Amino acid sequence: NTYQRLASLLLDFVQHPAFYDAGEEILTLPLTRFDIADYLGTAPETIARGFARLESEHLIKRLNNRQTLIRDKEGLKRLQSRGRRTR
Image (cartoon, rainbow, N blue to C red):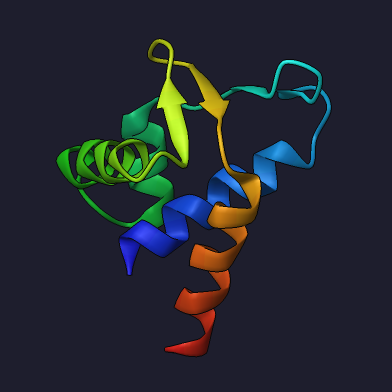
């Protein structure tokens, strides 16, 4: 589902030092939520809800439109792997 795919996308960006400051655990997304929605084949509103859900589960904290604090990378990985098992 979109929720797992969003977690997977965030983890993909975390692997790139150009986007992720591991010391601060801050991810600077090179894409807007519209770009992310287009990439994942869904609506921007769905992406906004996905970010809100990840935040409510304390996996991330959005700092602004482009920067996200990664609170629980292992939690994102668990979510990502759960999504893969159901496919």
